[in-house]
Length: 471
Ligand code: FRU
Image (tube, rainbow, N blue to C red; front, side):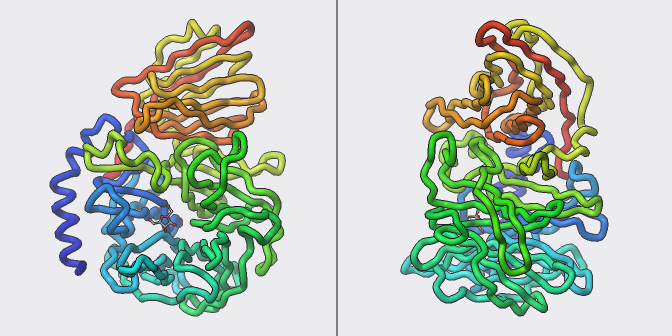
């Protein structure tokens, strides 16, 4: 589609749909969601010239995985976001089936530059991918510079999601890839400039690097230093469930290791979030030295068909902004400190679960210390079951009506739960594990609790969270 046609259709889609989407009782009060249409991966997360920029995979014309371009919002505090002109639309032949995920860098001249995947599908079902550049045009938009990298030999058309950075000497980039014999890998590239890349080789994946058979495709890789180690986050596809692990259709996890600019010597794969919806996260380091992360509270092809927001013309949202940190050599996550500014009046409860007052959880922050065993109900459709050593998140699936469970090991430490209308993010043991889910509890849901035996007790701090919409 030509750009002018595309823009006209977006205007029509926004005019017809924005009020309806905003009036949805499931619409988040402070999480990021697209004004209309489908949002998926966070892209191009960067702090540049004093503002945080976050881009996102966006179908502005509907709630299906089509027409993918990049929406763009900016903020100075990670809370109050402002819409910017749409950054990328798939108008060129080299991106005919989507401007897919990628990252943002400040180039040698300090110009905000996007590197993304041009996804191309052919009528016979085959596909190819180009890694492409676009540069800030000084007027809020981005000028496309075209493809800078074709497919490497031995790989399928599934090579995408460039995450690029400058290490002080040269450009580096990781790409998610699927080999011709269906192994998922993360490829490392090096470049003296952003438009001249050389393949160094795979640095992690299935069948190499000690993980054994580990999926047919790895999406959305992100390699970064944290303290004196490096972390690789990526999303492998094609891993079978093993006990309580890998229960979602696709996985999202981290590897810790040492990176020398060529090799990444790493340990085992750990799930980054053990809930139902969390995928394709992206990180950046901000000017305070923090490693920040946004994830997509969704999963490709899962539970999208009857999601209640569809009748309001929108689907999916981001996670809360999170900060990564080490604790006992384990990668932990916490909501960024800025979120504290949304907290209203505190209520404290300490006692038997059955005596818990019905606190409003439409938009709330809960800090919990839980003893013994018991259950916390979030409306009627989600339960958090605490038992020695394990925390179980149960929900009634909106598509199948069945109850299903995900769980995380629990050392008995503090639990923080952030509720925002149709999402719930749970940080276990001060952030050693997280469990995130969408849920549709209806209007004005309340918290309830049941004790599961002698010694069952709750200490709860509750704060309502203020509304903070994208302007
Ligand atoms: C992950 C993903 C990426 C791709 C994008 C397309 O959710 O499949 O690999 O670039 O979504 O929207």
